[in-house]
Length: 268
Image (tube, rainbow, N blue to C red):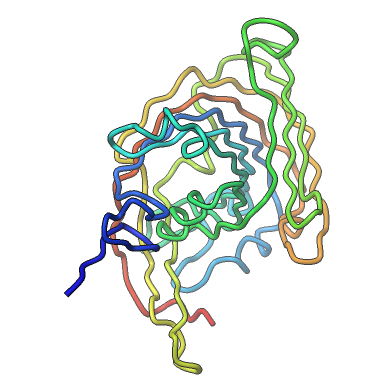
């Protein structure tokens, strides 16, 4: 009997064609974070049971752009950059589960298929998009990491621009923001192959970094615009009050999550 290998499809005799390798997954990235407040009711409508609004600042949102290099434990993907480099933009809110505050990604777009596959495994609602952000550099016209430096960021999907921002750094900061500062509370959903049978996979999971390191965060201000689109709803998280904007370089290791409960989300 033939055996097939691979962490995810396609599984083959060697396993070399698998879309993603097995964890741990390691990331190096430049993050631009724009935090603001929206109507808490718009956050609440994105939280399936048993999740509830956060007790403090329930309307806080972080819209984050990230320019990543990632790899498996051996690091071989870094020497074949098409397999390691990708960009993403994602919206994070906070929620409460059994008295504990969590972060939750409610929208996310990436530009590589392996990033979509990893995200769906982790409970991130990843879709394909076009993401760009200004990169810092110590020479030439690119901005340095310093007071007054300006960074642009754009997000588009299905040929429509969804968001754009200009971040101006002001000074070093003690943190890179607070909205995305908790373990993630995500759902892993998969419909049954049998029509009318609901979900074959319905898990609420906790996920976070197995390890984290980061450079000096910088804080500043952002000009942020969100745009309506036929098949996207990011603009429903309308900007009511700016909070702050941040830049930070980070290194993260992800190596699995923890099941909180299953079969209770009521998702359709």
